[in-house]
Image (cartoon, rainbow, N blue to C red):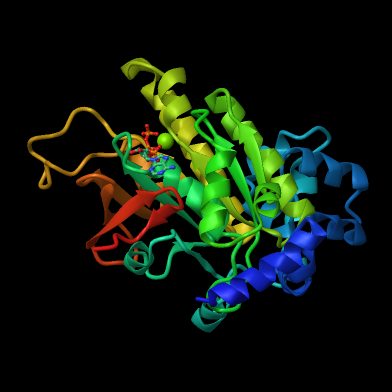
Length: 354
Ligand code: ATP
Ligand code: MG
Protein backbone atom coordinates (compact mmCIF):
# COMPACT_ATOMS: atom_id res chain seq x y z
CA UNK A 1 0.00 0.00 0.00
CA UNK A 2 1.23 3.51 -0.74
CA UNK A 3 1.73 5.77 2.25
CA UNK A 4 -0.96 8.28 3.11
CA UNK A 5 1.38 11.03 1.96
CA UNK A 6 1.83 9.39 -1.43
CA UNK A 7 -1.91 8.99 -1.72
CA UNK A 8 -2.45 12.64 -0.88
CA UNK A 9 0.16 13.79 -3.34
CA UNK A 10 -1.49 11.90 -6.13
CA UNK A 11 -4.93 13.18 -5.37
CA UNK A 12 -3.73 16.73 -4.82
CA UNK A 13 -2.08 16.64 -8.20
CA UNK A 14 -5.35 15.37 -9.49
CA UNK A 15 -7.74 17.73 -7.86
CA UNK A 16 -6.04 20.78 -9.34
CA UNK A 17 -6.83 19.43 -12.76
CA UNK A 18 -10.34 18.56 -11.70
CA UNK A 19 -9.90 15.06 -13.07
CA UNK A 20 -7.42 12.27 -12.57
CA UNK A 21 -5.99 12.72 -16.03
CA UNK A 22 -2.63 14.23 -15.15
CA UNK A 23 -1.47 11.30 -13.05
CA UNK A 24 -3.13 8.82 -15.36
CA UNK A 25 -1.29 9.73 -18.56
CA UNK A 26 1.35 7.06 -18.08
CA UNK A 27 -1.24 4.54 -17.04
CA UNK A 28 -3.32 5.44 -20.08
CA UNK A 29 -0.42 4.80 -22.43
CA UNK A 30 0.09 1.39 -20.92
CA UNK A 31 -3.58 0.56 -20.96
CA UNK A 32 -4.11 1.61 -24.56
CA UNK A 33 -2.22 -1.42 -25.73
CA UNK A 34 -4.55 -3.47 -23.54
CA UNK A 35 -7.31 -3.39 -26.11
CA UNK A 36 -7.49 -2.83 -29.84
CA UNK A 37 -10.13 -0.49 -31.20
CA UNK A 38 -12.77 -1.90 -33.53
CA UNK A 39 -11.96 1.00 -35.90
CA UNK A 40 -8.82 -0.97 -36.84
CA UNK A 41 -11.13 -3.12 -38.96
CA UNK A 42 -11.43 -0.22 -41.42
CA UNK A 43 -7.79 -0.81 -42.42
CA UNK A 44 -8.80 -4.33 -43.43
CA UNK A 45 -11.59 -3.41 -45.81
CA UNK A 46 -14.45 -3.55 -43.34
CA UNK A 47 -16.77 -0.64 -44.11
CA UNK A 48 -17.28 2.22 -41.66
CA UNK A 49 -21.01 1.52 -41.87
CA UNK A 50 -20.50 -2.07 -40.66
CA UNK A 51 -18.20 -0.91 -37.86
CA UNK A 52 -20.84 1.59 -36.80
CA UNK A 53 -23.47 -1.16 -36.70
CA UNK A 54 -21.29 -3.29 -34.42
CA UNK A 55 -20.64 -0.33 -32.11
CA UNK A 56 -24.40 0.09 -31.79
CA UNK A 57 -24.47 -3.47 -30.51
CA UNK A 58 -22.01 -2.40 -27.80
CA UNK A 59 -18.99 -3.97 -29.53
CA UNK A 60 -16.10 -1.49 -29.45
CA UNK A 61 -12.98 -3.62 -29.60
CA UNK A 62 -11.42 -6.46 -31.58
CA UNK A 63 -11.68 -8.64 -28.48
CA UNK A 64 -15.32 -7.59 -28.25
CA UNK A 65 -15.97 -8.94 -31.76
CA UNK A 66 -14.33 -12.21 -30.81
CA UNK A 67 -16.49 -12.37 -27.70
CA UNK A 68 -19.70 -11.83 -29.68
CA UNK A 69 -21.71 -14.78 -30.97
CA UNK A 70 -22.03 -15.01 -34.76
CA UNK A 71 -25.78 -15.16 -34.28
CA UNK A 72 -25.75 -11.71 -32.75
CA UNK A 73 -23.63 -10.23 -35.55
CA UNK A 74 -25.90 -11.86 -38.14
CA UNK A 75 -28.86 -10.02 -36.64
CA UNK A 76 -27.31 -6.73 -37.76
CA UNK A 77 -28.65 -5.09 -40.91
CA UNK A 78 -26.58 -6.02 -43.97
CA UNK A 79 -24.62 -8.80 -42.20
CA UNK A 80 -24.55 -12.25 -43.78
CA UNK A 81 -22.48 -15.38 -43.12
CA UNK A 82 -19.74 -14.33 -45.53
CA UNK A 83 -19.38 -10.92 -43.95
CA UNK A 84 -19.26 -12.34 -40.42
CA UNK A 85 -16.66 -14.91 -41.55
CA UNK A 86 -14.50 -12.17 -42.98
CA UNK A 87 -14.79 -9.93 -39.92
CA UNK A 88 -13.98 -12.78 -37.54
CA UNK A 89 -10.99 -13.75 -39.68
CA UNK A 90 -9.65 -10.19 -39.75
CA UNK A 91 -10.03 -9.96 -35.97
CA UNK A 92 -7.98 -13.13 -35.56
CA UNK A 93 -5.29 -11.64 -37.77
CA UNK A 94 -5.24 -8.30 -35.92
CA UNK A 95 -5.12 -9.88 -32.48
CA UNK A 96 -2.41 -12.26 -33.75
CA UNK A 97 -4.15 -15.04 -31.93
CA UNK A 98 -5.09 -18.45 -33.14
CA UNK A 99 -7.10 -18.75 -29.95
CA UNK A 100 -4.27 -20.26 -27.89
CA UNK A 101 -1.88 -18.75 -25.38
CA UNK A 102 0.95 -20.39 -23.52
CA UNK A 103 0.55 -20.52 -19.75
CA UNK A 104 3.44 -18.05 -19.61
CA UNK A 105 1.47 -15.61 -21.78
CA UNK A 106 -1.57 -16.07 -19.54
CA UNK A 107 0.65 -15.38 -16.57
CA UNK A 108 1.90 -12.17 -18.24
CA UNK A 109 -1.66 -11.13 -18.99
CA UNK A 110 -2.65 -11.71 -15.39
CA UNK A 111 0.08 -9.31 -14.27
CA UNK A 112 -2.22 -6.52 -15.50
CA UNK A 113 -4.75 -7.51 -12.84
CA UNK A 114 -5.02 -5.05 -9.96
CA UNK A 115 -6.77 -5.27 -6.60
CA UNK A 116 -8.90 -2.64 -4.92
CA UNK A 117 -8.97 -2.12 -1.18
CA UNK A 118 -12.24 -2.63 0.67
CA UNK A 119 -11.17 -0.16 3.37
CA UNK A 120 -10.52 -3.04 5.79
CA UNK A 121 -7.04 -4.56 5.71
CA UNK A 122 -8.40 -7.79 7.21
CA UNK A 123 -11.06 -8.10 4.53
CA UNK A 124 -8.47 -7.29 1.85
CA UNK A 125 -6.30 -10.07 3.19
CA UNK A 126 -9.21 -12.49 3.17
CA UNK A 127 -9.68 -11.58 -0.50
CA UNK A 128 -6.03 -12.16 -1.31
CA UNK A 129 -5.35 -8.42 -1.64
CA UNK A 130 -8.75 -6.92 -2.43
CA UNK A 131 -11.44 -6.80 -5.11
CA UNK A 132 -9.81 -8.13 -8.27
CA UNK A 133 -10.00 -6.72 -11.80
CA UNK A 134 -11.00 -8.90 -14.78
CA UNK A 135 -13.41 -10.69 -12.46
CA UNK A 136 -16.84 -10.40 -10.87
CA UNK A 137 -16.92 -10.16 -7.09
CA UNK A 138 -20.28 -10.66 -5.41
CA UNK A 139 -21.18 -9.83 -1.81
CA UNK A 140 -24.47 -11.00 -0.39
CA UNK A 141 -26.14 -10.82 2.97
CA UNK A 142 -29.27 -9.62 4.72
CA UNK A 143 -30.16 -5.93 5.05
CA UNK A 144 -27.75 -3.69 7.01
CA UNK A 145 -24.79 -6.02 6.51
CA UNK A 146 -22.95 -3.20 4.72
CA UNK A 147 -23.23 -4.11 1.04
CA UNK A 148 -24.07 -0.56 0.03
CA UNK A 149 -21.52 0.85 2.48
CA UNK A 150 -18.84 -1.36 0.96
CA UNK A 151 -19.88 -0.17 -2.51
CA UNK A 152 -19.46 3.44 -1.39
CA UNK A 153 -16.08 2.73 0.21
CA UNK A 154 -14.84 1.12 -3.02
CA UNK A 155 -15.91 4.23 -4.97
CA UNK A 156 -13.26 6.09 -2.96
CA UNK A 157 -10.51 3.49 -2.54
CA UNK A 158 -10.56 2.71 -6.27
CA UNK A 159 -9.34 6.27 -6.81
CA UNK A 160 -6.30 5.80 -4.60
CA UNK A 161 -2.95 4.33 -5.62
CA UNK A 162 -2.36 0.75 -4.55
CA UNK A 163 0.17 -2.07 -4.80
CA UNK A 164 1.94 -3.12 -8.02
CA UNK A 165 1.92 0.33 -9.55
CA UNK A 166 -1.86 0.76 -9.44
CA UNK A 167 -2.54 4.49 -9.81
CA UNK A 168 -6.25 4.70 -9.15
CA UNK A 169 -9.09 5.40 -11.54
CA UNK A 170 -12.68 6.33 -12.10
CA UNK A 171 -15.74 4.39 -11.00
CA UNK A 172 -19.08 3.58 -12.62
CA UNK A 173 -21.96 3.04 -10.21
CA UNK A 174 -25.24 1.45 -11.30
CA UNK A 175 -27.85 1.88 -8.62
CA UNK A 176 -30.98 -0.25 -8.71
CA UNK A 177 -32.27 0.48 -5.20
CA UNK A 178 -31.85 4.25 -5.06
CA UNK A 179 -29.55 4.02 -2.06
CA UNK A 180 -26.49 5.78 -3.53
CA UNK A 181 -25.52 8.73 -1.31
CA UNK A 182 -22.81 11.12 -2.56
CA UNK A 183 -22.57 12.52 1.00
CA UNK A 184 -21.21 9.16 2.12
CA UNK A 185 -18.42 9.54 -0.46
CA UNK A 186 -17.51 12.84 1.18
CA UNK A 187 -17.07 11.40 4.68
CA UNK A 188 -15.17 8.41 3.30
CA UNK A 189 -12.89 10.76 1.31
CA UNK A 190 -12.29 12.72 4.47
CA UNK A 191 -11.02 9.58 6.22
CA UNK A 192 -8.42 9.13 3.47
CA UNK A 193 -7.60 12.88 3.26
CA UNK A 194 -8.80 13.11 -0.31
CA UNK A 195 -10.24 16.08 -2.15
CA UNK A 196 -13.98 15.50 -1.88
CA UNK A 197 -14.98 17.31 -5.06
CA UNK A 198 -12.39 15.42 -7.10
CA UNK A 199 -13.59 12.12 -5.65
CA UNK A 200 -17.23 12.86 -6.48
CA UNK A 201 -16.31 13.96 -9.99
CA UNK A 202 -14.64 10.64 -10.64
CA UNK A 203 -17.74 8.57 -9.91
CA UNK A 204 -20.21 8.24 -12.76
CA UNK A 205 -23.68 7.30 -11.64
CA UNK A 206 -26.65 5.73 -13.40
CA UNK A 207 -29.94 4.68 -11.94
CA UNK A 208 -31.46 1.51 -13.45
CA UNK A 209 -35.26 1.39 -13.41
CA UNK A 210 -35.94 -2.17 -14.55
CA UNK A 211 -33.94 -5.27 -15.41
CA UNK A 212 -33.96 -4.51 -19.14
CA UNK A 213 -32.73 -1.00 -18.47
CA UNK A 214 -30.01 -2.46 -16.25
CA UNK A 215 -28.86 -4.64 -19.16
CA UNK A 216 -29.12 -1.85 -21.72
CA UNK A 217 -27.04 0.44 -19.52
CA UNK A 218 -24.14 -1.98 -19.96
CA UNK A 219 -23.80 -0.88 -23.59
CA UNK A 220 -23.39 2.72 -22.46
CA UNK A 221 -20.97 1.56 -19.77
CA UNK A 222 -18.83 -0.28 -22.33
CA UNK A 223 -18.92 2.74 -24.65
CA UNK A 224 -17.77 5.00 -21.81
CA UNK A 225 -14.99 2.59 -20.77
CA UNK A 226 -13.90 2.59 -24.37
CA UNK A 227 -14.07 6.34 -24.79
CA UNK A 228 -11.98 6.96 -21.67
CA UNK A 229 -9.61 4.08 -22.29
CA UNK A 230 -7.84 2.81 -19.19
CA UNK A 231 -9.40 5.45 -16.92
CA UNK A 232 -12.24 3.41 -15.41
CA UNK A 233 -11.19 0.73 -12.94
CA UNK A 234 -14.39 -0.32 -11.22
CA UNK A 235 -18.00 -1.06 -12.14
CA UNK A 236 -20.45 -1.43 -9.26
CA UNK A 237 -23.99 -2.77 -9.48
CA UNK A 238 -25.90 -2.35 -6.23
CA UNK A 239 -27.84 -4.64 -6.36
CA UNK A 240 -27.62 -7.13 -9.19
CA UNK A 241 -30.89 -9.03 -8.52
CA UNK A 242 -33.32 -6.49 -7.05
CA UNK A 243 -34.94 -5.51 -10.36
CA UNK A 244 -34.96 -9.07 -11.71
CA UNK A 245 -36.86 -10.16 -8.61
CA UNK A 246 -39.50 -7.50 -9.25
CA UNK A 247 -39.75 -7.96 -13.02
CA UNK A 248 -40.02 -11.75 -12.96
CA UNK A 249 -42.28 -13.36 -10.43
CA UNK A 250 -43.45 -16.88 -9.85
CA UNK A 251 -42.12 -20.16 -11.11
CA UNK A 252 -43.50 -19.62 -14.60
CA UNK A 253 -41.18 -16.70 -15.25
CA UNK A 254 -38.13 -18.19 -13.60
CA UNK A 255 -36.61 -19.73 -16.74
CA UNK A 256 -36.95 -16.43 -18.57
CA UNK A 257 -35.43 -14.55 -15.64
CA UNK A 258 -32.45 -16.88 -15.41
CA UNK A 259 -31.82 -16.63 -19.14
CA UNK A 260 -31.79 -12.83 -19.02
CA UNK A 261 -29.68 -12.87 -15.88
CA UNK A 262 -27.21 -15.19 -17.60
CA UNK A 263 -26.90 -12.78 -20.52
CA UNK A 264 -26.24 -9.92 -18.17
CA UNK A 265 -23.62 -11.75 -16.15
CA UNK A 266 -21.89 -12.86 -19.33
CA UNK A 267 -21.81 -9.25 -20.55
CA UNK A 268 -20.35 -8.16 -17.19
CA UNK A 269 -17.65 -10.81 -17.34
CA UNK A 270 -16.70 -9.73 -20.85
CA UNK A 271 -16.59 -6.06 -19.87
CA UNK A 272 -14.32 -6.88 -16.93
CA UNK A 273 -11.87 -8.70 -19.21
CA UNK A 274 -12.15 -6.39 -22.19
CA UNK A 275 -11.41 -3.21 -20.21
CA UNK A 276 -9.51 -4.68 -17.26
CA UNK A 277 -11.93 -3.40 -14.63
CA UNK A 278 -13.15 -4.89 -11.37
CA UNK A 279 -16.86 -5.68 -11.38
CA UNK A 280 -18.42 -5.55 -7.93
CA UNK A 281 -22.03 -6.62 -7.44
CA UNK A 282 -24.16 -6.82 -4.33
CA UNK A 283 -26.86 -9.43 -3.89
CA UNK A 284 -29.78 -10.28 -1.68
CA UNK A 285 -30.52 -13.52 0.14
CA UNK A 286 -33.41 -15.97 0.09
CA UNK A 287 -35.81 -16.06 2.98
CA UNK A 288 -36.06 -19.86 2.90
CA UNK A 289 -33.10 -21.07 4.91
CA UNK A 290 -32.71 -24.74 4.23
CA UNK A 291 -32.48 -26.76 7.41
CA UNK A 292 -30.71 -29.37 5.35
CA UNK A 293 -27.97 -26.92 4.43
CA UNK A 294 -24.56 -27.90 5.86
CA UNK A 295 -24.31 -24.33 7.18
CA UNK A 296 -27.87 -23.40 8.18
CA UNK A 297 -26.81 -20.11 9.76
CA UNK A 298 -25.20 -18.95 6.54
CA UNK A 299 -27.59 -17.03 4.28
CA UNK A 300 -28.14 -18.23 0.75
CA UNK A 301 -27.82 -15.77 -2.14
CA UNK A 302 -30.60 -15.38 -4.72
CA UNK A 303 -29.94 -15.82 -8.43
CA UNK A 304 -29.50 -19.58 -8.41
CA UNK A 305 -26.90 -21.47 -10.37
CA UNK A 306 -26.59 -18.81 -13.04
CA UNK A 307 -25.25 -16.25 -10.59
CA UNK A 308 -23.27 -18.87 -8.70
CA UNK A 309 -21.34 -19.80 -11.82
CA UNK A 310 -20.98 -16.27 -13.13
CA UNK A 311 -19.48 -14.68 -10.01
CA UNK A 312 -15.76 -15.33 -9.71
CA UNK A 313 -15.62 -14.73 -5.98
CA UNK A 314 -18.64 -14.77 -3.65
CA UNK A 315 -18.55 -13.31 -0.16
CA UNK A 316 -21.23 -13.89 2.47
CA UNK A 317 -21.82 -11.02 4.89
CA UNK A 318 -23.38 -11.50 8.32
CA UNK A 319 -24.32 -9.19 11.16
CA UNK A 320 -22.25 -9.09 14.31
CA UNK A 321 -22.60 -7.01 17.45
CA UNK A 322 -23.05 -3.22 17.10
CA UNK A 323 -21.36 -1.99 13.97
CA UNK A 324 -19.41 -5.24 13.57
CA UNK A 325 -20.03 -7.44 10.55
CA UNK A 326 -18.56 -10.75 9.43
CA UNK A 327 -17.37 -11.54 5.91
CA UNK A 328 -16.82 -15.11 4.81
CA UNK A 329 -15.51 -16.46 1.53
CA UNK A 330 -18.40 -18.47 0.11
CA UNK A 331 -16.92 -19.49 -3.20
CA UNK A 332 -13.61 -18.70 -4.89
CA UNK A 333 -11.30 -20.29 -7.45
CA UNK A 334 -8.22 -19.61 -5.32
CA UNK A 335 -9.12 -18.44 -1.80
CA UNK A 336 -9.67 -20.55 1.28
CA UNK A 337 -13.02 -20.44 3.07
CA UNK A 338 -12.23 -18.34 6.12
CA UNK A 339 -13.89 -15.32 7.71
CA UNK A 340 -13.01 -11.91 9.18
CA UNK A 341 -14.74 -9.18 11.14
CA UNK A 342 -15.04 -5.63 9.81
CA UNK A 343 -16.92 -2.53 10.95
CA UNK A 344 -19.08 0.08 9.25
CA UNK A 345 -17.96 3.59 10.20
CA UNK A 346 -18.62 7.13 9.06
CA UNK A 347 -15.41 6.75 7.07
CA UNK A 348 -16.67 3.59 5.37
CA UNK A 349 -15.69 -0.04 5.85
CA UNK A 350 -12.77 -0.43 8.29
CA UNK A 351 -11.01 -2.86 10.63
CA UNK A 352 -12.42 -3.22 14.17
CA UNK A 353 -10.35 -1.20 16.63
CA UNK A 354 -10.26 -3.86 19.35
P1 ATP B 1 -29.77 -3.62 2.10
O1 ATP B 1 -29.87 -5.10 1.89
O2 ATP B 1 -30.96 -3.06 2.77
O3 ATP B 1 -29.41 -2.89 0.87
P2 ATP B 1 -27.04 -3.21 2.94
O4 ATP B 1 -26.32 -4.46 3.21
O5 ATP B 1 -26.76 -2.51 1.67
O6 ATP B 1 -28.60 -3.41 3.17
P3 ATP B 1 -25.93 -0.88 4.11
O7 ATP B 1 -26.86 0.17 3.68
O8 ATP B 1 -24.67 -1.02 3.40
O9 ATP B 1 -26.73 -2.26 4.17
O10 ATP B 1 -25.56 -0.73 5.62
C1 ATP B 1 -26.43 -0.18 6.55
C2 ATP B 1 -25.68 -0.09 7.84
O11 ATP B 1 -24.67 0.90 7.71
C3 ATP B 1 -26.58 0.33 8.96
O12 ATP B 1 -26.30 -0.49 10.08
C4 ATP B 1 -26.18 1.75 9.23
O13 ATP B 1 -26.29 2.07 10.57
C5 ATP B 1 -24.72 1.77 8.80
N1 ATP B 1 -24.33 3.11 8.38
C6 ATP B 1 -24.87 3.84 7.39
N2 ATP B 1 -24.29 5.06 7.33
C7 ATP B 1 -23.38 5.09 8.32
C8 ATP B 1 -22.46 6.08 8.78
N3 ATP B 1 -22.39 7.27 8.23
N4 ATP B 1 -21.68 5.75 9.82
C9 ATP B 1 -21.76 4.54 10.40
N5 ATP B 1 -22.60 3.58 10.03
C10 ATP B 1 -23.40 3.83 8.99
MG1 MG C 1 -27.97 -1.77 0.15
